[in-house]
Image 1 (cartoon, rainbow, N blue to C red):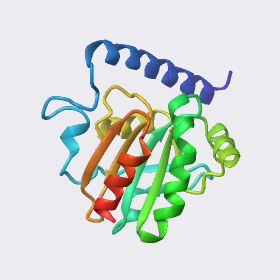
Image 2: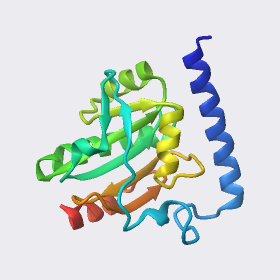
Image 3: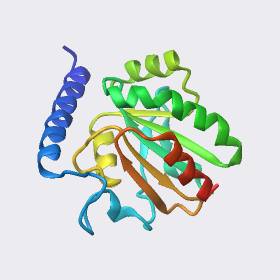
Length: 180
């Protein structure tokens, strides 16, 4: 087994354990105490990051300055992530011309993420990694490492909405329309 696959396997096991522990300890992961978790970032500047994309180029959040940015943390092995991807692609196509940039951040192997994006016709940037993706997720309030996890950033670079779990299209559209 290659070292990269070993890292992905360890990350997946850690995420699974985190999901179990989080389920036992926190009944509603979108409602946390002030100063902890996803809600702590609301109204705050989005943490900067630079991650590799599925073609090997480094991509920074700064590249999307002045646009509304929806970040979606996902993985190819995550069933709810797979289910929401076609809806996210449709939202990307509909709102890109109005100033939306959608970024998929995959906790996965680069080739698997690339193949998945090709299979589903995903046209928005896919950033990929393991430890660096997990650290970025934590910086964005996903302390338990659960997937899918989404963050909406306004044109001024301020976090306006976070959501843990499979996105509901109606709610996502309401959040986007308020910012576009």
